[in-house]
Image 1 (cartoon, helix red, strand yellow):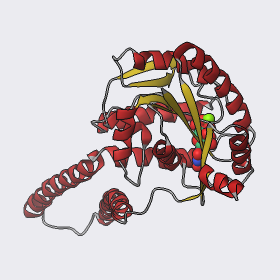
Image 2 (spheres, protein in one colour):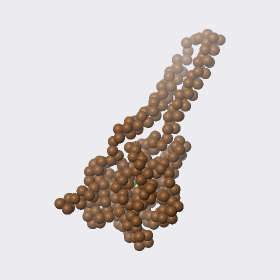
Image 3 (cartoon, helix red, strand yellow):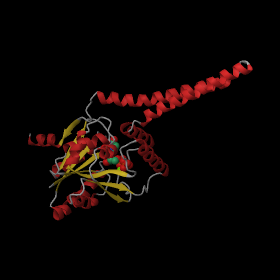
Image 4 (tube, helix red, strand yellow):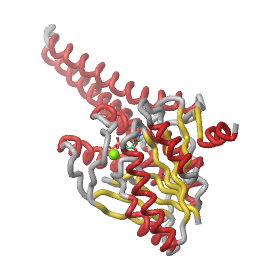
Length: 319
Ligand code: UDP
Ligand code: MG
């Protein structure tokens, strides 16, 4: 039985050796308890620090370590996809390099899959300790909104830390879309998922790669990727405005017939004009958001471009 650990890494030179140490410790335990072999797949997402050098070093010291290095930064979602594609394991786990996803949970997660009742063991954090309160508030709101709009359930607090069997991994790989929102993809493919709760752990080294703006863009990605409700909303707003305008026309016509037509109401007309064109542009923007995603999708660009893998290193050292 082989277990692959897929670890997307962007500027994680400090965290990677710590991750490797902790993961190897758990791997040795699980070799004893479950007879499981491991491979570690580090995906260097176009890092600007020594992440690639660290991966090379780990590979030459331990052949269980494999890596894929991207030609530039393609984002965590692309990293996960590349790692899943490279994984050869019967069971595949995705986890962060910063030890915020504790490898010590893996034995329990594997037990769940081995029982035959579950295809996937996923994790969810119960607290957001150590996170700015504003960020937590927006995160909760995002989950509320997306779950109301989308048929795909997106679990609040879910991490990208999961262990999946081969069948589910292959299903996820079948969704080779360019705009990837993993939380949605994992949920969309279905399968029986067991949830494990744990308290938030702070990262061991390095800093978070997310800021408010990137999280905001990511949330829009999630909504556009897994719901068409905003399009319906745009159409609905159009219908409501038409109705209001219709009522307005009747009111104005009746008033003109009864009381004549003094030329007043100029400021209110400007306001209405501004409101209507604002709403129009807003709705056009929604449509544009879907159009741009569609545009990127139909170009069929690759999700990532690899510039080096551990196979290249082996070929080099063979001469
Ligand atoms: N990551 C990545 N590419 C990126 C940004 C992040 O591969 O463009 C990786 C990062 O190295 C880490 C994981 O994604 O292993 C989660 O990132 P981070 O810890 O910064 O996010 P947070 O835990 O704060 O949500
Ligand atoms: Mg983290």
